[in-house]
Length: 302
Image (tube, rainbow, N blue to C red):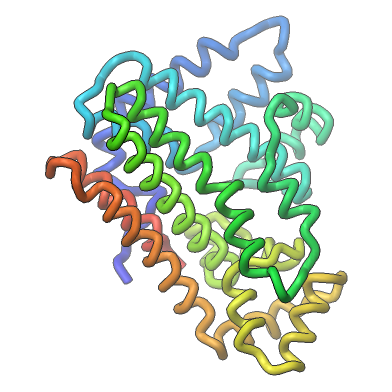
């Protein structure tokens, strides 16, 4: 595996650094409202607390690939970053998280009510479905891909579509970039779910086992369940329908059935589809950078 980290992709960061700075300036300028100091404080905390800024980077690099440098790219990038941060506020409250990327979450600092109020104008459809969907061995795989499509891939897709629209792309180009974003998002979320069982918390910033202990059914567990013996399947059913969680045993079954490798194969499947989606665009430095960005999504440190 390449020693590539999506959060520290030097080539991409160099390409979009000035754009990201302009986006942050735009956000701070537009949230600086003395009449809503709480919202200003929470949003400023989110913007300043690190994170990968994957979605705005995606907007900026697509605009560059399409030769667009107008101010609307800043508005679009800021909008998708607002939406993403609002979903994080909801996620952290629902998951009772205390830290993200090593920084205290907004709900830990200001409380759950404040976090929800700041993000209340958004409907987090995928999160709601994940929270309310019960473990059903007959539909678990189908539900999983529906959920990550709605939670993650849909926003990636929207980023790409918005970037292509403001750049004056043709309908065909917009559709291809929309599909590219969706497939990128699907691959990204599968790898993120794999990290729950494989991550080095010190380098990835992701708390190992967090999703498992919250009862979230992700692809590595689904694969281990599908390939498991009746006794193993009973174990997984208990894990995801009760408070009985044995992470070491779960990890043993996942490793035994090569569930991480098989999950990676699925992520690569989506990567290949995403690469095909943009294959008709003219070769350029920015297209190459976009492809590198895509590939880096499945080369994050385990």
